[in-house]
Amino acid sequence: MNVHKAERLPVQRGPAAWNAILPAQPYSAPVDGDIRVDVAIVGGGFAGLSAAKRLRQQDASLRIAVLEASGLAEGASGRNSGFMIDLPHDVQSDDYAGTGVEEDKKMIALNRAAISFAKECVEEYGIDPAYFDPAGKINGAASETARNLNESYAKHLTELGEASEMLDAKAMQEVTGSRHYTSGLYTPGTVMIQPAGYIRSLGTGLRRDGVFVFEESPVSKLARVNQDWILTTPNGHVTAAKVILANNGHLESFGFARKRLMHVFLYASMTVELDVDALSRLGGQPRWGITPSDPMGTTMRRIDTAQGGNRVITRTCASYLPGMVPSKSAVDRAAKVHRRKFADRFPAIADVPMEYSWAGHLCLTWNGVSVTSELEPGLFSACCCNGLGTVRSTLTGIAAADMLLNRPSKISAHFMAEPEPSKLVPSPFAEIGANLYFRWKEWRAREE
Image (tube, rainbow, N blue to C red; front, top):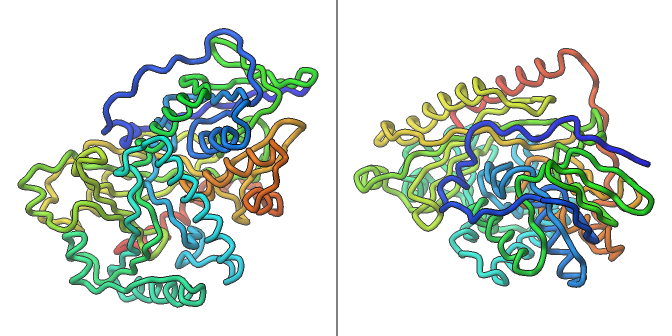
């Protein structure tokens, strides 16, 4: 009998603000008692729900259960910035460019397949279109160095045959209301989502399709008994012929990919809802998204009432935390940085309070691969977002479903061809060194 006990369960720090600004969800009961299904999916985020949807598309007769440790959109899916990016976006590079023209073209095609998949879900389930806005995004620049990075990225996009547009300071102010940005690079293919709204609505649609979506049902143990897997939760057991682990970095908590996953937490803050006076002082357009030209800079986003209120979101600061538990002090430190970054960009409304500050978990590998494969007979993984949680996790969920059903696709072929994640060099100073490196990168990108 193969047994995998969870060494730790997810620990969240701060509220999942994207979820908090939406109306309260209807109560969803956790697993209660013992049930049997064909496929059990651990994790109810982008990967897990995408896997469930793909399975339903391929075989509507399957009994499927999704087990989410907390509530839908309370974990990482309610804590990211909501950019579904189609173009190369390597957060470990200087300017987001990938490994080469041909590889980047393949990745663009996959990213767009994920976006198309999400769009189909929006249309089929009647998800509010405000939660899925094909508005594109801008790489903002506040210095000549940053402009040079944008120009380098734009040149790479031209080599790929992809459209982009350089914006001057006036155009940036017209979009954002801010004089902080001296230039920007607009790319049209990104979809700006309300991540909690999308995930909650996808869960609702799957339930209508007959998928069991259990919340507050953390899995503490996986056990292979004869030909079945038995998943233990606080209030019952789920028996399944096959299982997909769609729990991102917590794959390691079950003993897989040990010392191969890098656990990084990013931090963000969201303003209170802006009143009429603040909106007048701010100016600019009601919805936009700015990623920094330097990946270690500051991401900014503005949303409107259809997405949860007229608010501005600021995201910057990162921590490498192998134990996967962010501290309150880390959130507090980041919140102070967010206040400064917000005031730098919007001095006319610098007095607007922040209502929420939080940490969000992402998982990377040294060589940039995901962990999407059959780990043991009947046990599959759809993990490791590499900082691209909305698109990459959608892809890993689709791929794991295709692998489980033994129905090859271009998406599953991509992940099956990836090598193993590189081993991390063990060192008692690794965490200290990585976090010092993050601080230095943040300092270098301080204007951005």
